[in-house]
Length: 323
Image (cartoon, helix red, strand yellow):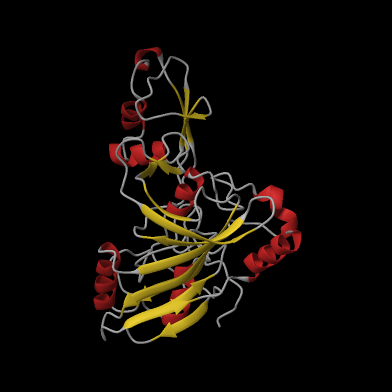
């Protein structure tokens, strides 16, 4: 068990100061993205589009789309996020090791730890901790070395990490071809309409709330989730075992919420963490309980499990006592 306090790397450059522009009468009617190409010429249109999409561009203090038509007197604010670090600096980050060999590492990611660096998370990630343990991890992506799959920040559970280029390619292919078997445990706010079932519903990003995903009415990416109710509690909550055939962003959280059974404690999808804070619910009650895959070198079937973390056990005990 590795259990050390995370240390800030301090390796990021300071972000560029925000810029404010006022739309002149001659510029009225321009699309926002076309206007910014004129005003912030050193950035490409695609880079500016990403800034707009991520909420770093505001018009009169509000987020708008790239095609928004500007009006005379509009104030346009462009905020520049801090640049990504050129080099990841290893940090001591807590995680449990279930298995390690020359090709791979199997760990239990704690809730609250982000898997890899990204916007707003430049230190203290699982990748920083892995580099502190392994010295080197493979991969062309400098901020995701060794990573072949991920868990949301507030989801705990089992993950496999590649330690060689060959293992990275093989494991990534196994995930892509749906050869990896993943099982989760979740405490739901309400029970699904049936004791067990399978939901195949495509998922896409929410058109307004960009941090959220949703079941798509049209288009979207194929996603399939199965569930089995394990235990029911007074007032409606239940413990379920969940399997996923695909690995879409927020898949379990979105699919369960679409059934009227959101994950307890999930603030994005109706899990009302504030209602259950007295029970110890301070994050989504979702845990990656087991992972099974074929070893990239030996060909042996590997299966790993992680028991529920203390916070979920505490919530279950409180629900059982209330029942």
